[in-house]
Image 1 (cartoon, helix red, strand yellow):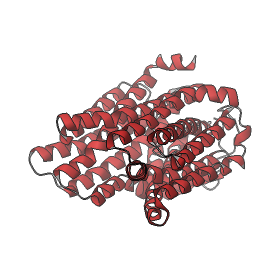
Image 2 (image 1 turned 120 degrees about the horizontal axis):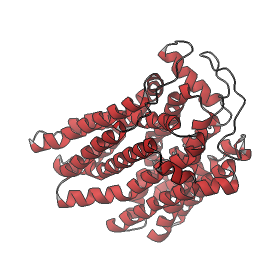
Image 3 (image 1 turned 45 degrees about the vertical axis):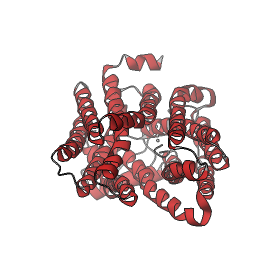
Image 4 (image 1 turned 60 degrees about the horizontal axis):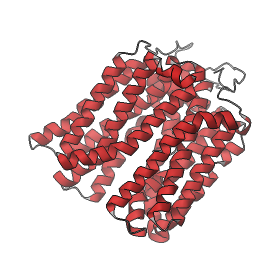
Length: 432
């Protein structure tokens, strides 16, 4: 079986272990980073919100060039460099705290550097995996990585809370530093370097970015997946930004109950990772993608109709099942249809669309709270989720039977990008 075969694959085990450790440490800091701003530096809630938004700035400013740069470089050194960069940036926080020199501008600078490192790491990892494992194992590999992400989202904040309570936020952040170091060590054990394919013709950075954009928006399978993920991420950005206020202010839940509800939702991501392969076998890849969208839309509808924490938690659970099911299959299809030399630009363009939607969706959701109320905003998000299925329905995807559609290869040059050569791949944080 593919699952057992991958566990015997040394390079995949190392990449998966690096990703798992890094994701867990990042989720520990999801709680610890804002807490050190609130409790140590007495930052305002607005400043803490802005601190979170700063992490997405690199995706908006450098998301498209990142793909072109990754396509020019061997992937493993990029991954290791990103881990080292993030470890050094995060290490500066507990060090400054120990000497009484920590200030809010430093946290903003660290947040930007972490976002920059995460952008390059994510694009390089998604471009590296197809070079390490066989095409028929891609869906299982992506499912294992998404399972680690879901577990980290479930366990990381709780672990972070325990570390902050038992020690301090600075200690919790130091644990995140250690996870980046361990991740880099795992990456050094990978033997496949994942060097990029040689370019047939040397073109400018702008030309390479344009080539990636033309590929994503010109491909009959990648384009609808990108549009669907972008719309879903726009909706889920509002949900994620307002889920805690919704639980506290609308459902009148205690803080511990809200934490439990969010944990239950994350468990849905674990289930989604487990069932993805079976769903694709039973339904075919195209219909399984539609099922993923239908599930996260159903979950999004359950949220505004909920009157208690049980229904709220059930809604988030169903959302995460659908999101992970969609993400794994989307990523696998996109990886498979994309020529190796365009993988970095394809992944970066999808991340630019998805992560670029996060600050927009969160901001619009916040603006709509006054006229619509929290429940009304959740209804709007559910409506956008429902509409996100349209690009898939009006495409070739519903008839896709497996992860290898094997489209007819066409020449891919700097001036014209058609359907990819053979080969085929996607992500909450939102859905992308």
